[in-house]
Image (cartoon, rainbow, N blue to C red; front, side, top):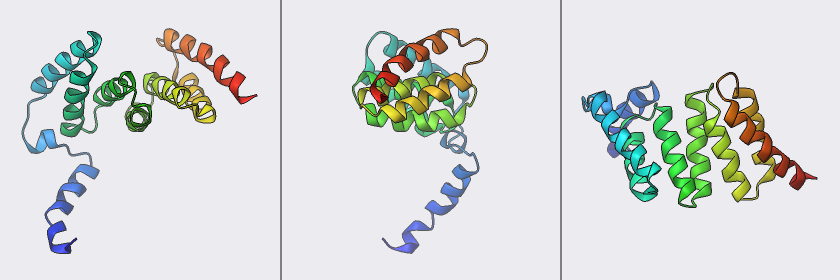
Length: 154
């Protein structure tokens, strides 16, 4: 690759590394992304996972700092059986909101499907750390899954 070809890309990467988004560069209004998110969420909830995946993927490209977009993308990947891809997506999502345990819980489910028991255990431990008030269901799901994971680690 020619280094002169990389020159226009470097300022963009620097901008994005500092938290800038393509949404901001293109002056896309947040209400437009919110509308796309609502449609993607509805498609996911109606079992149209491939359509939801495509929409969440575009949302993630436009705003790589939004937790909800990465959670939606990871959950869509999971439902389509792309457990390794979902795990990677959810790892990024997990970093975007350190108080929400849902990405960690979905990550644990991916690792269970991949039979990576130690990684599943680590993800479930993260769920327990993040499961404060308001996350009772997620905590209960994690406890139930932890029993299965612990039995595989013995």
